[in-house]
Length: 256
Image (cartoon, rainbow, N blue to C red; front, top):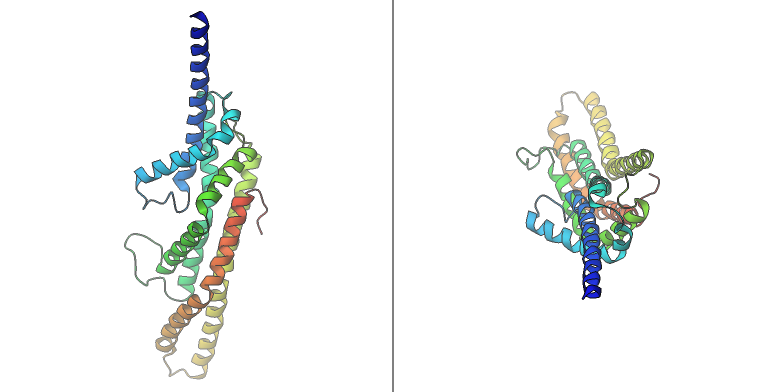
């Protein structure tokens, strides 16, 4: 009877350690889900996001439970949440890159006020790029790549430990630089085309002051922007998806 009681007590202690480790995993995954593209969007109901967080936690638990069992829940809760938010924001910056590129394109082609969305500041082109990018990412196996990304996160930022400020600063600066680089690269053809077109309109206006070039130039610029958008969107989205996939595979990389 004494031996059986001892085994039960040991089993209960082991279960308690595993429960705390599982809670730490859920804290990190839940923080990532708060900013995760596609699965963590505000349009996704909260219950579905909670179920997805539980599923991602269950997917990575067998690989990371042994390393987290020595970590106390009280000690590791806040570091896990901070690490999860850092990893999630690294992915969210790719969506902000598409939003920034869409805003630049819309302003360069005089389409910033096309189909206004009430209180939201995003132009229609930005929403189009974001929706297309998320669709491509999900179609390309985003769920499996997120699982690999979460597992890689435990190798880069061990559980239950506060990451060093230098590592977080380097990670943040590199990722912000990468996001702006992508945004400018996507929007650059529109900016260059708009600049050349407006310079040509200025020359025409100087040569023919009586011609109201604004009545002709603005609609032509918008039409040309839509044509160029239809032509190069598949290419720029493939570039964005390649960069997004490369980041999921190797988050610690230099900004281009």
